[in-house]
Amino acid sequence: MAGSQPTPPTHARSSETSWPGIGLIDHLTTAVLVLEQGSIIERMNAAAESLLDTSLQAARGSPLSDFVTAGELSDAINRVLDTSEPLTERALPIVVDAGHTHIVDCTLTPISGPHREPGILVELIQLDRRNRIAREERLLTQSAYVRNLVRRLGHEIRNPLGGLRGAAQLLESELRDAALREYTGVIIREADRLTNLVDRMIGTRHPPRMQPVNIHEVTERVRALVDAETSAGIDVRRDYDPSIPNLTADPELLIQAMLNIARNAVHALGDAGRIVLRTRVQRRVNIGATQHRLVCRIDVSDNGPGVPDELVDSIFYPLVSGHDAGAGLGLSIAQSLVYEHGGIVECASRPGDTTFSILLPMDSGE
Image 1 (spheres, rainbow, N blue to C red):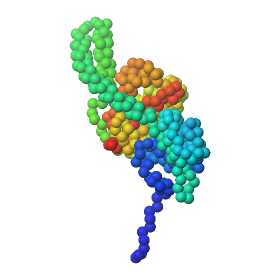
Image 2: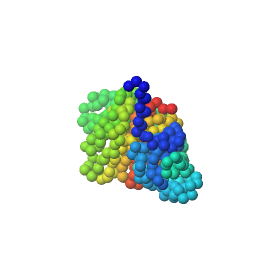
Image 3: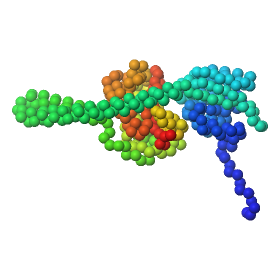
Image 4: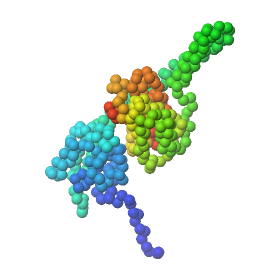
C-alpha cells in the first residue's frame, strides 16, 4: 500500500539485543556467557558453545549446572550475587557434560539493563587452550616428519624386497626337491607380507578425491562394519548432531581413518564394553596455529582401560598402538589420512573413558 512502512524483520533471538552491546561477544575468542536469575543461561558466544560442548539454542533458559560441573565457579557466582561486586578467580577446574576437564581463569561482572533482572557476565579464559595449540603444532610437525621418513624408508625397502622375491621364485623353479621348495615358499610369503606392511606404512598414493560428504553416512558405514566384526558383548552407540552440514572430503579415506580408530577401541575392550560414535560442530577452533570458524568433530569413545601414560605422546607413531607397543599401524594411518584433509586426530584418555577426536575444518581457516 502507498505510504505504508516496511515491517521490521523478526529475529529468532530477540533477547540477544536486550543487553546493550551484547552482540559484540560473538567476535571474541574468550568464552562469554550471560546468566540471569542467578545461573540461568540467557546468552553465550561461539567460544562458550565450543567450551561447554553445546549450542545456545539448546542451553538458553537452562541452568549452567546442566552443562558444566564447577563447584568453585558456582561459589564465585553466588558471591557476586551476594555482593554485586566484580570478581576474578584464577585456575578454576570445570568439567563439561561431555566429560572434558578445562582449567580456566574466570571473571564475573554484575550487569543490569532497563526492565531486566540483574545478571552476571561470565568470561572464561581457557588456560589449557594455549597448551593444546602448542601440543597440536608439535603433533602436526611430528606427524609430517614421521610420514615423510616412513615413506622414504618404505620406498628404499620395497626395491630389495622385490629383488628378493624374484630371486626366490627363480630358485624355486630350479628346485626338484619339494622340501627345498617349501623354504623358497617361506621366503616369497614373507617378502609379500613385508611388502604389504610397507604399503600400509606408506599410506595412500593418491591425493584425496574431494567431494561433498554427509559425515553421518561415513559414521554409519563405520558403525555397520564394527558391528559386523565384533562380538555381541560390544555395544556401539550413536550420538549425532543432525544439523551438521556437508563437508568437502574424500569419504573413503575418512571411513578408513575412522574405522582404524574404532578397531583400536574394539581391541581395547576385548569381548565386552561400549563404543560411542559422536558428531558435533565446533566454532572458532584452532588446529595447530590456524583458527577455523567451523570444525566438524567426530569422537570415537570407549570405556576400556585407557591409554598407558607412557604411550600418550607416541600413540600416533607407526608400530605403536594405544595398548601394546609395536602392535599396529592403524592410528598412524588414521592421523595421516585426516592430515590430508587439513585436520588432526586428538586423544584424551583416562581409565574407563578414552576418546579419539577427529577434527575436520569446514572452512579454509583464518
